[in-house]
Length: 62
Image 1 (cartoon, rainbow, N blue to C red):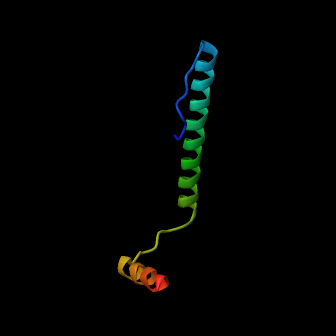
Image 2 (tube, rainbow, N blue to C red):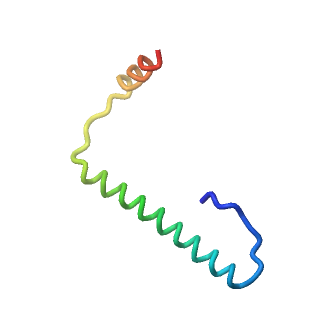
């Protein structure tokens, strides 16, 4: 979480900060969950040739 620490001056600010952080965590969890569901729905896995991938990347860079 890339939030900048700030000084909390009263209870109300503290509670709002806790709620905001919990909402951020919830949003991150939902994004991960959505990515997992998308991956599962994308079909059966295919083989991956690391050497061929490296060659294509080197060739693309020139």
